[in-house]
Image 1 (cartoon, rainbow, N blue to C red):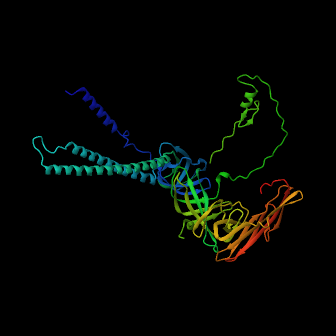
Image 2: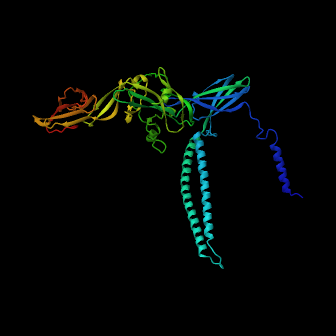
Image 3: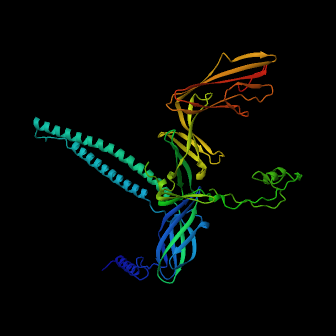
Length: 562
């Protein structure tokens, strides 16, 4: 006779199988709605502004007759809904477009994440094999140690047999111990590699496991037709900044200016092999011209303070403190005004050979034909934009009062017609990096000076002439005379143009008089006191310049800035 519990089990199993195979209840047989589709979109083009970016996606599918809801996911969660535009190709009508944020589905795994996961799995498999080998060697060692007896209690053992067994134990235990040591060293290295891979993977996954954006497009079709959708939208946390490489081959050639850009983005979506366009437009500034409103002025009339009871809940002091918002006193009798919302926080071919420059009346765009990959949250991607050859003249500058070396300068002209932006300049001379400079496009000068470094072949020396420097009393005043000799020598095989600068003290006191006694052929700036000599030095030529001036001030007084 069957047990009651067995009958109950059979009945439950039968009911489960019956319900699972009923039409419409099985998960595998549940029909999907053909008018609701989740489609894939490909990021094809990114226009990067100075502090934003416009992304373009293309999605293709086939829809049936009627109304179809197309879900396009995997987009940045921070896409600007107001800037979202959807256009289509095909015999369909776009009925509605809306965007959502999906907090459930993480972004798809990128190539670096997949490669890291494969490397981590390989390292973990190797780690498991090393632990297994260590366990086998330890058990073999324990077995040998547990079977050290050579002969029985009744039977002895010969010396030759004992020697053989001793050699066997020694060799085998030595081999096991050596393999254990190597295995332990290998274990340490593999453990470190697993840790590094895991930390790197955790960092990438932390960036990947972010909410994503999705767009739902409702389309209507009369029959089954193919459709192609194009999405355009703006995102924050993206932009680019210019950087320049200025290269001078020698002092007889024009300079080569390579225009580059640092492109960075933290939108949550990797830009993989996309076509980039860099635009000098700043969309956050807006395009509406400002309007002046009337500015009213009046005499301030202080409002008398009313006396009230100073209890725990009121009083002049507490009321005054309560009436202050962000440091502005507000009258208690005035109606409450809602504070405005806080503003939102915002020698071979190069890529430059594949850049198309489009210039409009207010901006310049650089269309880069070669695809680029810019990871979200990663290091800025350096992009070659374009290159220009600019005319330049070269001269030497020396300020011996401050520095004993002469500096080679490149004076670059013609830069203003290329619509450049302000940015850092890396300067190279004769293939060697010499330093950084700054390109200021707001400068009103048509010539920019870039230092190409110190030139030790132009020797400059400034020394005080004691025979002409003296101090004497004239009536109630003290008259001090100072004289300097400046010697310059060109040891180069070619002539150089040298600009030498020094200065004359400037008096800010009517009791102090400064007089220039000698500075032959020097240009003098009366406001700053700067003295400038412009000389041409032939090869191996030496020239001497003289600077002499006097300072008169009241006797018994001390000078400052002297």
